[in-house]
Length: 571
DNA sequence: ATAGGGTTAG
Image 1 (cartoon, rainbow, N blue to C red):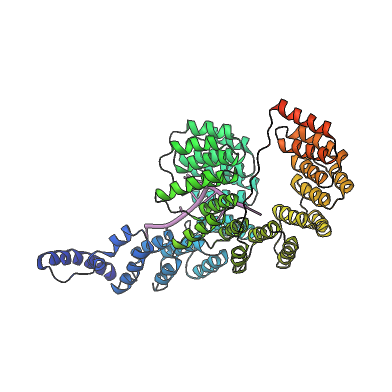
Image 2 (cartoon, rainbow, N blue to C red):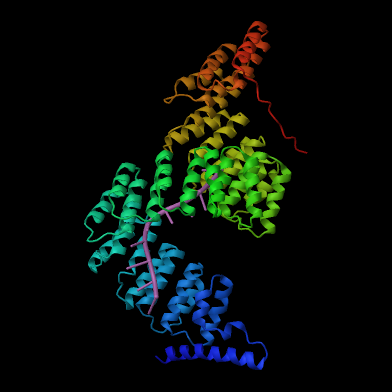
């Protein structure tokens, strides 16, 4: 109580102090001390002001003021500064349940799950957890897919008689859904005493994550009231399910939209390659945030429109929006496609000069990829070697870099080192290493990896993987083997497979097999003139000039022209 | 004074 009074005193003192300052025009009083801590807490929006408030609480003797400390902890959580929070918390001599819960929630949001759990156990020595203690904890279990921990917390909840708490139950619905126990979620939902928009929305999101759009829609139509998040969950759910038509329909129907509604929709179009529709919505949208810019920039990068991606990045820069890690990944992947050393250097400098956070594994991987594709293998290797913990994606970037620069053997070495480190390769990693083996003519290694992929890692080979193998065998001149391989495919070969076969035929002047491949290519990608050009080259090499002119006729009749290739020559 | 459901990356 006395402390509370002291707090009030200091706040009234500050107003007199301000008056004194005005009347006497004395030496400047530090701004922070003339304002009350409470109002400082209210207006604090950055780490800098937090750093000023922290010593102030100590100096003004407000460390035992639990309401104030509680506000301080919430502020620390929003600024992701757990150190200040726990520092202040542990100075409180007997923190009440409010404070314990607040720090527990801070920890759930900012710490590893194991730390949060030990804090929870510490808390239980002096407090009985209530309805505010569990939701964040359960949420943390959901995001870490910690099924057993979450389930044991659930039994503690039952034991404490807290299962009917609306917040707790909603977090449990989400938790069981994330652990793919949809039935358990639904049971909790059906037996609820009362539901609100949040619990309905949680249930809908669970159905979308289990790919059940029909039930999700059924609940959406049935629920009594919807809010913005409900609509956004529906749009995002349809987008992720590839149903852009329904997503767009709801997008047009919804009473109000925010940046997430726009970004989900834009991202959906961008990922499906429909950059025109994405751009249309993007232009319509006034409050563009980093998410929407990054959706557009990565969309252009993935659609192989690096110039558009780069232009948008510059526009974003001009509008003074600070790029985040995802934007940097998109930008770098666009620059990798441009393949110019000067641009790669520019991006490298841009990032370091602006102190942008480029230490995430994804950004580093993109940076390695960009440098490798822009011919600066030294820089790529430097970045790769300076990574303390190399992950799957960075290994892939580096292996692909080696492969591009003709050192397939080095790529294979890296792949084996990666396995030794205990990193589990995925389908993309195998595509990279198989391509590398193909380019270096490492038949034995390639075949070994292909077998390893199927037998040891249980990955079903995709048409891309088969194309790599056909390329590998074909380059080595094992044409019969390559063709046998194509015929053995359990899935329909796509253009990449036949294309690999055709180029192998061109390399080894195998006219008969080339004719077979071309026939199939004309079915799957009739618009690609390159295939016909390859074929005419094969005929020409075989002195079959009548066939050559026949191909030329076909091309003229279909109005096909070879798209001129372009090469960047590095110095 | 404390809590639950929604967004981007090879």
